[in-house]
Length: 105
Picture 1: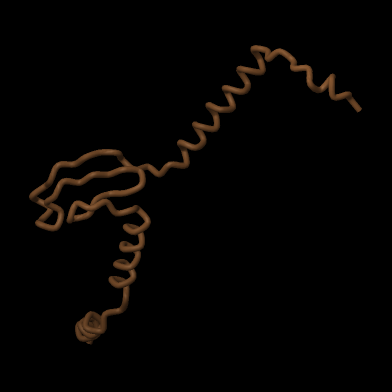
Picture 2: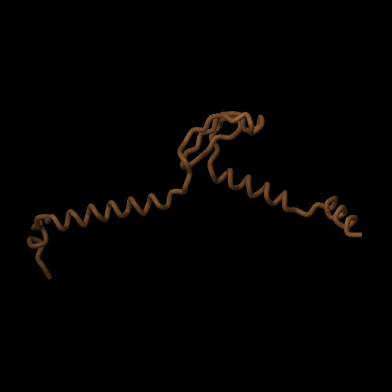
């Protein structure tokens, strides 16, 4: 078992140790940047061709995007709203089923 005096002595840091340390820091930053979603950080002008609903300026950031009223909304809220809208649109429509049945006969 080494003595405390021997453990207290500090070895000089070599160039190899420093390069490995900073390489690991750079690799961690690179891996963390891959985890960020592919969201453009930009500002878009209004487009009158998209109707009055999307006539305002748009701001996008990695954590939020603005809505039609200009307030920032988190991406998780957008995804929940899109999922809810898709579920509503994919529900069976009795009128459409009746029209298809009338065409088939």
